[in-house]
Image (cartoon, one colour):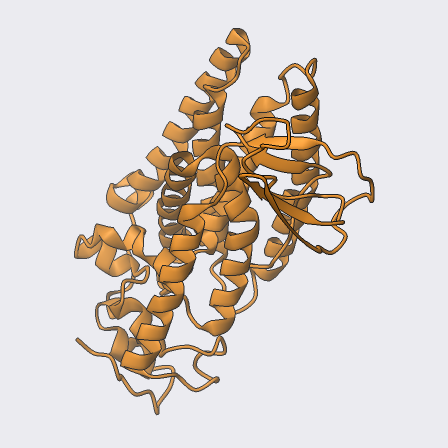
Length: 334
């Protein structure tokens, strides 16, 4: 998942803070001059690269919380799990895993997306566990950079509970679509869930575009979301370019983004202040979420269009990979 910073020309402060010198926190400045944190009168500053237009209007954008707790938690856990996999099962040669990580069969043993085990062995937990695993160091770094930048900022805006619902729901959606379009591939990574955060941000921008701009804070909010829209679209374009290279699961990327859009529409439509727009976009949200997840669950676990029929070879991933690499060594069999 490529790193892209998507911010606007405004400082950020906690939702419960005041506009005076006792503000709880100024989370981020988008003029590129400095980042300020204010807590009990203390101010810390550090330099940032230029991210947007260079102006010092000092506008404040209110967010719900100071830190993205789940963004940090998942990033730490994902790093620890990759280290544990490599210690326990060894590091594969680059010809087998160019991401600098464990042997491919290890990914399945530790909970990667394996359509055969999900459908035939009813290991439904594999719809979520792939987001905790990564194919290697390069894969992990790319994902957590985005997760700790844009992902953490989105959590500050939305609140941790909404962020978690979107993140986990997108993980399920990404795994389901990956099973449908790439049923014979073992895949891991949090990129599907991260793409879901981008999809949800697009849904939020769409839902809140109809909001009034009469107050100063409303105008600042629209400016921030306009800047975020450009950043998200640029990030999605870059991800699309990398989605069709070897070892990248484009189905998980697309599935996560669509799931994030659906869940985001559901969550943010009911926050619209204008009653008529809340009803309209709420109905669209319910319909799109029901259709998207209904079709995926029907295909994977039902008989929709013949159902899903992954190869039986995935029942033994060690033997499966030995047919591609004659010198393959299964170091992590359970």
